[in-house]
Amino acid sequence: MSFWKEKSVLVTGATGLVGSWLVHKLLEEGAHVTALVLDRDPSSQLLRSGDIERISIVNGNLNNYQDVLRAVFTNECSTVIHLGAQTIVGTALDDPLATFESNIKGTWNLLEAVRQSKGLVKAAVVASSDKAYGESEILPYTEEQALHGDGPYDVSKSCTDLLAQSYGNTYNLPITIARCGNIYGGGDLNWSRIIPGTIIDLMADKQPVLRSDGTFVRDYVHVDDVVAGYLRLAEVTQNKNINGEAYNFSRDEPLSVMDLYKHISQATLGKYVEPKVLNTAKSEIKDQHLNSAKAKKTLGWSSQVSLESGLARTVEWYKEYLIGVKVG
Figure (cartoon, rainbow, N blue to C red):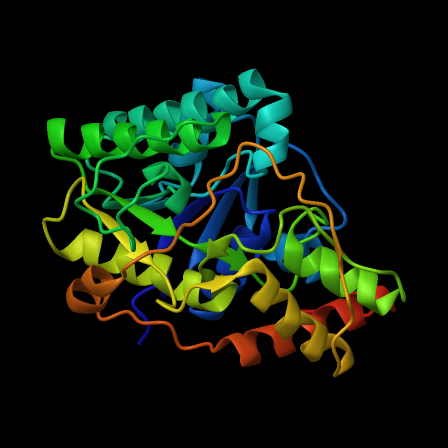
């Protein structure tokens, strides 16, 4: 029997890339899912798949503490997975205040609601990011390294992470943190990101654009691996005293933006198409990648989706998306 069968789970950010697929997996496992939703986005995989009709919706805003408290208590959620955030680096640069409101205030509201649940919540997993580490000469990042984000988005994730650690450790609450590399997969409609933007351009016979000079190094991890990581971390958080601990989730195979682009081009068209290199990326760390040995040792998690397989799945999703086929 699945660990998640009949469990009551609150997911924030359920209309996003990770949230949509996480909800889908929880439903497959027999969980009762509640989502705190601000806006109904018809392009979201959560709606396109029909999964939104199978879950409880609490309409509200992470910035409103009473909304968050209501989301936790409406269906007596014993597990909380906090994904809700403003996730675009460029947007954070243009509008830092809104990003801080969403990512920082939204997180402390969620954590305080967990504290006020008086033991109802048995596990809460908070989404941080590799960006929380900030720029470092020591790579790959390990969980012991200090967090010192610099740009607005990076700072928002450092604060999110530190708040979760504080609540977990100070109040002895079952709160843990997930730090993932760059997440990709079908359902990501943020075209400024390299994978969906490149795939759509190639399918439309347009020359793809690279915002950086192509030498930036990153981790890329498929959303299915990330969903598995979140669920496994939530399970262990409930069963072991790992309060306030953080875990990296990565394929441990970093590559440059240009190398990634070549893989995307091959997966989409079966050939290489020369991109237009703008070299205009701002407020972004040049090299970032994670060491996920702790997640492998403590959680028994490791990436199961190769880059080639993940890109093939992703390209297929966008092909179906473009012709209006319901996916899910």
